[in-house]
Figure 1 (tube, rainbow, N blue to C red):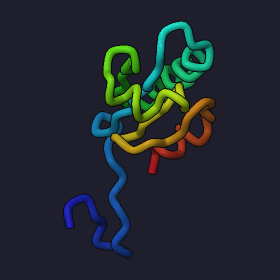
Figure 2 (figure 1 turned 60 degrees about the horizontal axis):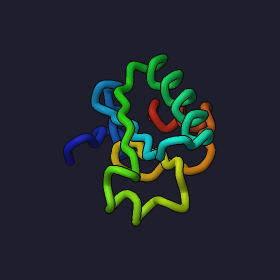
Figure 3 (figure 1 turned 180 degrees about the horizontal axis):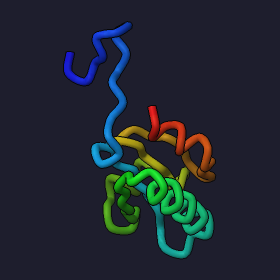
Length: 95
């Protein structure tokens, strides 16, 4: 299987540049600003790219996440919402 280690069938760790953190936010959201600060720090430290998307610009994101803003995705999967824990995000990006 691609991405699997021959030892114990574990997934091989991805390189930082192969990861992607997505912050789904809305304008004027102080929790979103807090989340962005954590993401910038962790991704900057680890060399992981990140992006942000606004629920105001994407109706699908609005419908899916409007009650949970901010939402953080790691490699397209929901990692957390409302508050971002620096240690937990760092751990998710280094496995």
